[in-house]
Image (cartoon, rainbow, N blue to C red; front, side):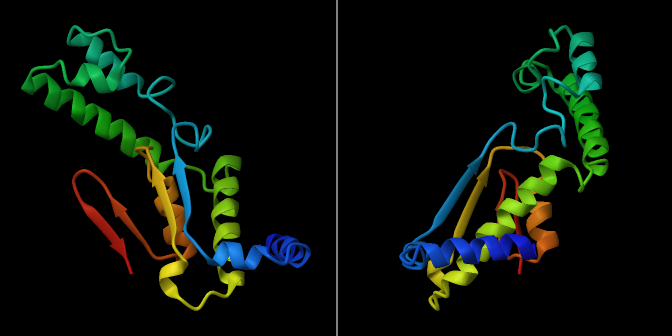
Length: 162
């Protein structure tokens, strides 16, 4: 992290208006599919047990999200259990030292470093909004492990770290 902060300081020193610009607004990120590289499988390259279950229930096993909605309640429940089991297996085996996770962590730490260096004393001006469309929790885990305050809003719950 020291090298990153040195690079940030050097950049700010050579761009005197940058501090005013960065301190004056929000920073927003929208992360979509592919953000995590190979750290977490996507529905095309992974979740083979779920795809197999969908095929056993008469679906093609090609579009997990769409095909789950075609199933009757009992098949849906069974397929969802398989999906959740696979998801939990993948989640527990994420390598925090993988290149994708390390790059994402460096990005977030650098952005937070920029905000800190901007020295804006008004807390409402130091907001970074991160929106992710991914179903894994890699971004949330990085924020939590780095000690950043965040709110995670999902369709079924609100997770707060304060």
